Image (cartoon, rainbow, N blue to C red):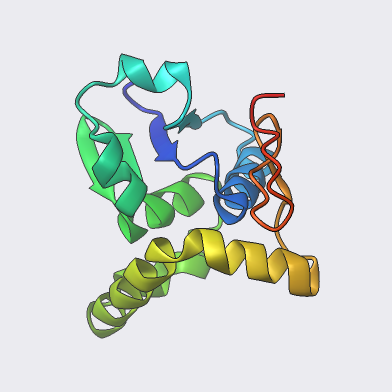
Amino acid sequence: MRDKLIIFYDGECPMCCLEMDKLTRRDKAGTIKLVNIHSSEFLHYPDINKQEAMKVLHGRYQGNVLLALDVTHRAWQLVGLGFWVAPLQWPVFKSIAHQIYLLVAKYRHQISSFLHRRFGLGKAHCENGVCYDKRLNVDNRGK
């Protein structure tokens, strides 16, 4: 498991789930393991703080903890599409991209809900069905 990238993601975020689905489809070599921070499996990783993982994406690769866009960069490199995310590591662009990432991460639920409702983008469901829908006051996560 040391050579795998473990990604700790918010499984209640439709945009996050969509991204993880894309990575899974591209990961033919099985180099990425996904752990939903809301699942019981997450309890096996007590060194990863859930509150911090809710703020920014966390990952573990070769014994090191990666955060935010460093996780994204490593993941897409491992599935052979690193050239698409290479600018995330360029000095000037990296700091700007990080600030944008923090803003998107903070409002990811609202953003993904808007994108799905307005444009049909993203996933309307998470791991176990439709996530909580505030408009209809329906919670299908446990179904």
